[in-house]
Amino acid sequence: MKGERLAVLLVSILMTAVMSGLAYYFRETLPPWALGVMVVTPVVSGLILLLVVGRKKPAAVPAAPAEEPAPPVEGPEKGPAPEPAPAGPGPEAYVRAFLSALQREGRFLDFLSEDLEAYDDAQIGAAVRTIHRGLRAVVFEMVELQPVIEAKEGAEILVEEGFNPKEIRLIGNVKGKPPFKGVLRHPGWRAKRLTLPKPREDDVLAPAEVEIP
Image (cartoon, rainbow, N blue to C red):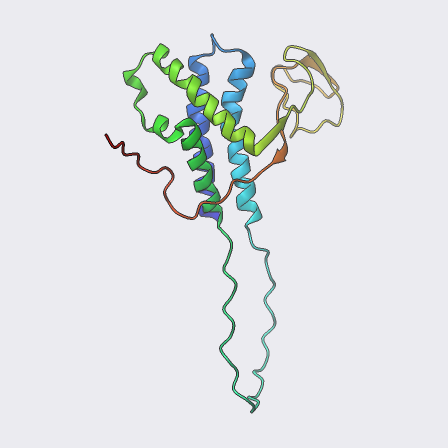
């Protein structure tokens, strides 16, 4: 289970690094909400996959006390023990399905495999528009987002005493105790609805494409 969580974490970190780098490239041209979507998309994706891994974790069963073996009982011979029911798909099957969907809709794996040093910012920007459209479709098909704070960025916000630090992160010159009055820099996101992808048992994330002339 630790290995599966580590794999999910590495995928999420990789996606976050790539999208954060792209957001930095276009910080002067894209609106704040677009930059926020670029950064939050891999984070939400990682949370979905971690949720899948967590659901697959088996419950701990206490060990039964040792007992003396019962004496054999003569009687008719018993048939073979029934085979255990096959286990459901493991968390790695959902990770494969998610990566496959990202590749299918946004060519995400191709994008990560490409050396961007050979292209200028204008060329990267044209590619990002298509990739962003595909990744947005994949993620928003699986998760319905809702802002943590229903207000526009730049609005004045009063953070009352007893606020949940998991929902609101204070930044800037934080001194004293709440209530705090500040400016909303990002409304945050919460997952209102989650739909798990159909698991993929094979290891093929994207088939090879051969064009027949």
